[in-house]
Length: 165
Image (cartoon, rainbow, N blue to C red; front, side, top):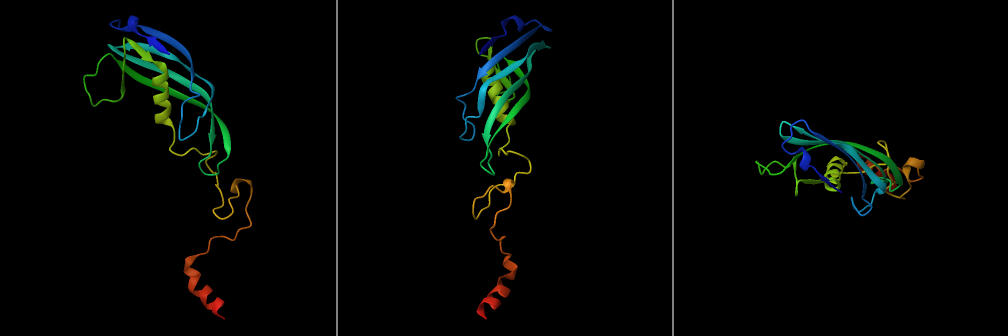
């Protein structure tokens, strides 16, 4: 969705509220398509000292597969977004400013970039997820498995002596 900001350019103190419902069902993140339903993006663009500043909030329901235990889970996601907008860049190295195209900001692109930069490298169902047993593959969040624990290599010499007898 494009947001025309023409009315804000050159009018210090002017503001423009916005509300958008974005479809991210085709967005792939870590080989998953997590967006469930629409993503709501609401906020305001203000002209502050000649610079356009977008402030808003993204809210979405996301479905993930845990990177540790492979269980499917849903999570409500809320993200505060603050993005500076400009018609042209004075510093080519500055990647924190979103460049307007035809005096418009693409809310889909601004919101998606903010989300991708905010996501963790690994998505976990919970902070204390125990993962899967490396031997039998049982989900350790649902209880212990019957596999013997990993052998401590410091006892290998003693085990060898016992097995030789």
